[in-house]
Length: 208
Image (cartoon, rainbow, N blue to C red; front, top):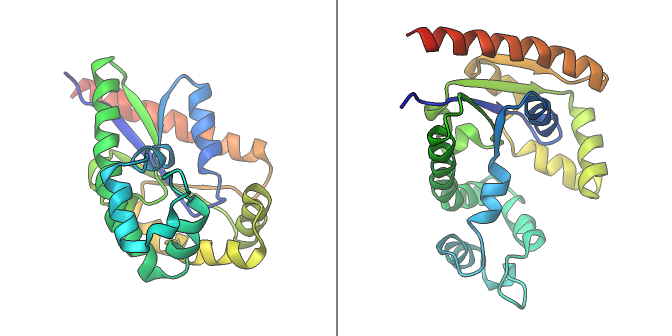
């Protein structure tokens, strides 16, 4: 059975990764959102959630035993050390879920899957995908999008952004860079070109 081609989107929060994935979905491409997998692995009573409470305390739980994401975020995104601890716990579980999803798509005969993977390099997933796309946007745009989307203040938004890998660090590690600083239509035009490039790559691999 031929391996499914995987294309991962990276970039800081607010850059436009989700919009890029939606564009590919509109083309009929399968997708996986690692944020959804991250929520799945912390279901009530899961091994991952138990490890998180051991590290960050029982006060990250709601009274019913479910994860209080706001409480966890307040602790885990406060500094780089805390975020590293969070990643070291959750990433192995997320990677396992991701592989299960890819196995299912492969069995269905899918040729391409795009993955929204904010922590691609931190998790080590970069070693297991075929192409990596950086969605880049100016800092001010990131702040404005996050404060509007997540209803947090500017200080919280900047803290979240600043603990993520910046574009300068990522740009030499990826295969494509797409800039999202203008209109949605400008962004989609760039994605059109990316889509064609990926289709050409698939054709080449099919001949091998």
